[in-house]
Each structure stands twice: as structure tokens, then as C-alpha cells.
Length: 124
Image (cartoon, rainbow, N blue to C red; front, side, top):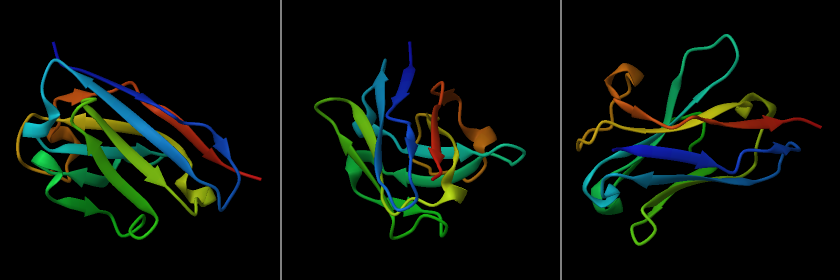
């Protein structure tokens, strides 16, 4: 069955970097769009990045553009989110998700498969 497992979350100081990983199983991610979302306490889950099938296209929310980079390693069936210049407002639980389609939906309700999430805390 489809499974997504995130890792890499941690406590980091403002201005620091982290790389999150999302290991996929049960399907070949090369064929489908993968998304990264985050949810801060008291806030709605927010789409922050997507990568298209075969890694051919990417999307970034304005809040992370220029600081975050999404990539994929098809040999490892893993999607990454490199996060640089982290800010306290980046503090959230980060999730990867897919609905096994070619669409990067903004509505998190459209995604059928989710990982368990990984906590990122940016604080001095």
C-alpha cells in the first residue's frame, strides 16, 4: 500500500538550514506530483512546494520562494525539501502528500495520502 514517511525535522536557530526527506513506498513517485505542506499551531495546513512527475516542474509558495528547494531522487523513491535561511515563522509540522495524480492542488483536502509529519522548530 501507499506509504509516506517524513524525517529530518529538528530544532534549528534562525538563519539555519534543514533538509527534510519523504520516503515513498507502494508507488513510483516519478509518475506523480508530490507536495510538501506545513501546519503551524492554530493555523490551516499550507501548501508550500510541489514537484512534478519526473521532477520536471516545481511550485513554491511565496512564503518560501528563494529559500526552500524541492527535489526528488527516483532511485531512492524519495522527495526532499531543502530549507535555508529559516525563520521563526517557518516553525510547523511538515508533511509530504500525494493523490497519485499530475496535479499540484492547493487544497490539502484533495490529497489522499499523507505522511505522519515531522516537526521543525526555528528558535534561538
